[in-house]
Length: 264
Ligand code: SF4
Image (cartoon, rainbow, N blue to C red):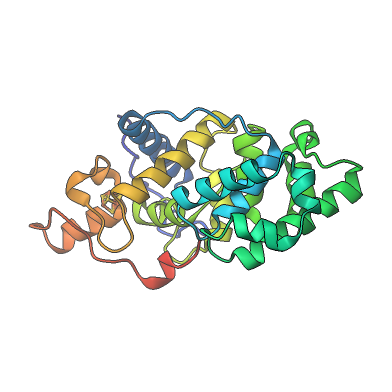
């Protein structure tokens, strides 16, 4: 394994990072990805088209994966096409997605987005996003109401295989604990900072996203990370700081500052 090399430069960190040694941070990001992909396995890209992915990601906001999947399947069973959903009574859409958080917000939002896509594109289809340069596709999608940077990146990375990183609450929290970004960086700011540490390659970015997501769900959990079960301890700033403070500590790290964990 290539250990991050110690920096001999002055200890003034680059903005948003815990150090000015970005080469060391890139090496750490690559090493974390390699170890976690070996642990959890590579995930194939989605076969959903961009519009279907957008629907799924909107449903998933602040909602568990299982409930999102049920709601998505309910919509597909109830409406033969997304155009049928767009034109249906909003109450019928909301009824299908009662298991997700805020169905009363998400149902009209889905329909409004679909009406706007239809009006602007002449059809209800987002496949064209895959043919645009990533910045152009991101700008188009990000204008839609309720579609933030994480949703944009999920649609373009998962469906179009574009090199753009989504940062959810798990990716954000684990990246801070590892020391890839500074503790007070927001999830929104983390998109650009973390992406600058990764290759300009959709597969590498997808692996990093999926790895930190699964690690955050299973091991580096919110309240008490299960460090005794972790395979990146020696390159984790949080764990190393804990060991320095208490050399006998082995199994868990204290909860992070609230500001590090609240963003989604
Ligand atoms: S060592 Fe602990 S804090 Fe660091 S990534 Fe692993 S579980 Fe998270």
